[in-house]
Length: 342
Image 1 (tube, rainbow, N blue to C red):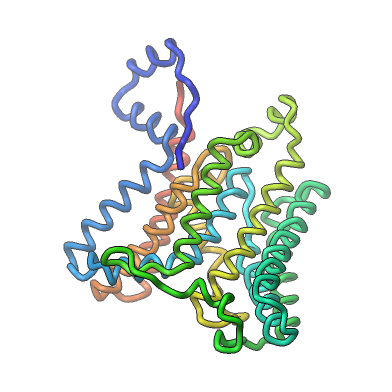
Image 2 (image 1 turned 60 degrees about the horizontal axis):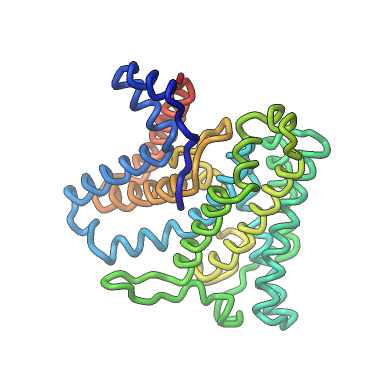
C-alpha cells in the first residue's frame, strides 16, 4: 500500500523552505497521514513492553492481531465512506444481518457453504446500496441515513434469526474456516487475519492506483469541484457504499470464525470501534485525506492499548478512557493539519 502525494512545484519548494519547523511538520503530516498513527503505535509498543515484557511476546501479539481482525476489516469499509466525508453507523447491523443469513441458510436449508458466503457478501453490498441510494438520490445526510438503517438492519437480522445463535459445530467447516490458525515463525495467525491483510492490500491498491480511487479522494475533498471536473459524484458515492457493504459481508465470514458461532449479539460496539480505528489512523472526518494503511495502524493502536493496559493491571474503564482521549487527540490533530498552507 502506497500513499501518493501531489507533485511539488519549484515555487512550493521555495515556500516550504521559508516555513518554520512546526509548519514543515504540519505539511509532512498533511502529505502522509499514516505517520502520526505509526509513531503512536511505536511509542505504545515501547511503553507497554517496558511495563510488562509479556506484551511483546509472540503469543500476546498474535492474540492482539486476532482480536483486531474483525474491527480492522470493518474499518476498511468505514474508511472508504469517511474519505467521501460521510459516516456509516450501520456497519455492525449489516455484518450481523449477513452473518445470520449465511449461517441460517447453511444450517437450516443445507445451502453449500460457498454459496452462503457469496450470499452474505451480496446482502452486505445490497445493504450498502440502500445506504448509498438514500444519500445520493434523496440527498439525505449519511449520518441520518445510517442511523436509521442501523435500526432497520438490526431489526431485520433479529427477526430473521429469531434472536438465536448458530454454533460453529452446526455449520459447514468452510464457514468457520477463518478461525483456524497456522504458524508464521513464532506467531500464530488465523485465516481471518490473513484475509484482512489481503483486504487492506486490495483496497489500498484501488485507492492509490486506480481512477476510481482518485475520484473517491476528489469527491471527499470537494464535491462541487469534482462535479465541475466531470466526475460523476453520485455514481462514485453509490459505488463507495456498495463496496463498503460487500466488505462488511466478507467481515461476517471472518466474524463467524473469530466468535466460533453466528450470534445476533456478536459485535455490539462495532460502529464506534470502526470509526475509532479510522479516526486514530489519520483519516479526516471531513473527507479527502487518509489511507487504509493509517486505518490498519489505528486498529492496531486500539488493540495495543487494550491489551497493554490489561496486562499492566489497569481497570477496564480507564482503558475506555484512554481510547476516548486518543480519538479526541486524533480529531484535534486533524483540525490542525487541515489548516496547512502552501
